[in-house]
Length: 503
Image (cartoon, rainbow, N blue to C red; front, side):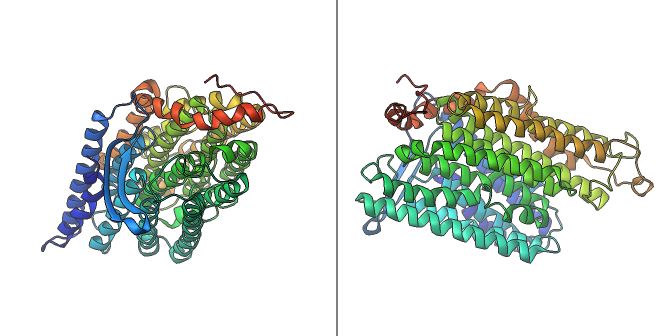
């Protein structure tokens, strides 16, 4: 069941070398491959049993047994929603690619490599196998930014690859430490792999995990590569970067940080919650100061990913479920925002908030794009009826009993999200349309379609969150049990709270 999800994009790459394929036909082939991958993810999701936290559809093949590297795949309630979301956003990103893209064969091969790398990472149940898939997307994304990016693309791509390479080194070192110091016979993932390590060893290895995946998320102060990468990347690459690739960082924190080191995680949870507050507020205030629409959306991602760290630090069933919702919600909402910003830039040739005005004009502006933008910013600000509200409500509800002060400060960040996005909408879409924008090219329905699809899903899952929650509830309860077991002892320390767990 899981093999086609990982390897279909790579098998499809062979089709790109068929003779007589120009850029437009290559795009159709890529769409077909991504469409099949997305449909197969839905087939897997329909057969997925959300009532159990156990791994499902497990594939286990010996590969390099002396090195402890095995081909072991599995899916649970943490990875299942991310796999489906990845398939959808890959399809959207390819659809948003211009048919006349330069060097189309190389472009689509790089996209397919990223597809395989991300899906493989989400499904890997072997630490080394995860690392191989995690690193697979490094060079393709570097090339996508460096070849098809903006004027400062070489700087942004180089900065991205340096940060991400450092992330990989730290993660690999932590994985090696877990296995070598813990005495495990292989790198196959097991939540008890690090249980025999001393607290000092756990804290050191967890530190590598936190910094490594914190770069990928990205969390403050490891965030500086992200705004540059987004500004220089094309619209499809920004969709993949914010919607999909950042989730490798948050997924890694949950799977390998909280999952492997529950005792150390519980010990430093207050620090993690405070780190989340700093990241949220920094991303929020930085977004307010931006004049470039794309850079504003990029900084908003830093703040919204900080919510995931807060919920993971609290490690309650509700907050953990909230992390999954937040990852999917952010993927869909940021994807929608970048689609719309891309259309605005394509029609007006600028993303400067101070230059753009009156685009909501029903006759000469971009009224449909403006309407979708209003919906997107409402979803990002956590308005009820949207998926962003559900994810943030679960995070704050699940985190408040553990970290009330940090949760309240993060809620301030949510309120400020409305501020900078309202500034964006008010300055860009309201007011009088300048003379320079009176003859804007018409937005075709094909250009609106991705926005409509993402907007509908954001509303549907905002009104019916149980349709996704049923995949992840059992996993959320099971994932935090180990943390809950160590908290009663810590609760005896002065000033600490009693655990909200009864089990």
